[in-house]
Amino acid sequence: MSNLSTISHYLEQDHQHCDDLYMQAEEHIAETRLAQGAAAFQRFMLAFELHLAREEHLLFPELEKHLGSQGGPTVVMRNEHEQMRAILRQMLGAIERSDIDSFFDYADHLRMLMAQHNLKEENVLYPMADRMLGAASSAMLEQLSQTSAAIAQGVAA
Image (cartoon, rainbow, N blue to C red; front, side, top):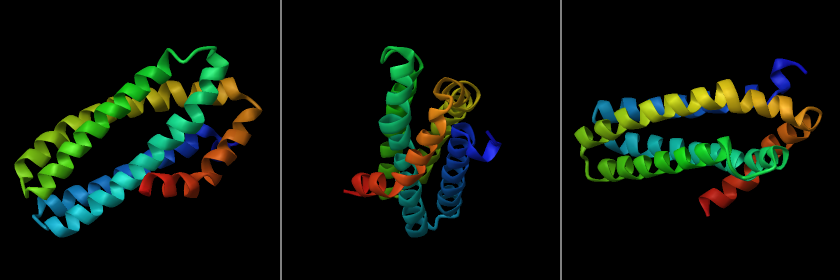
């Protein structure tokens, strides 16, 4: 299996895409271009929700079948997803109030949580998925990429 066709590589690239979108939003807000910052933050949030949906609705249930339970690492990841969603809602509220200081206070917390979360996924969960799913990992990879549009429509609805 080449590196380009692993679940790890696909989802790590997705992390990078979300990080890039986030940095664009943060740059606009830091330079008090709030309208552009709000639009960029919305683009980031859509991409981020799409990433979380891929994990929560596709990858995690498949891993749980192999793990034999819905406990363990996927529960931790889901809990962290909810923490990040809550912080993002606070950040969005700060943008809407033009409260740049609060936005960056929340951003500090988000960056710390995301860095720790992504390390766990990229160093433990994704490689575990590649190993556990074995031959089925190419089917999962296909599902992750093909269902993006359908999930995006559901997230946007």
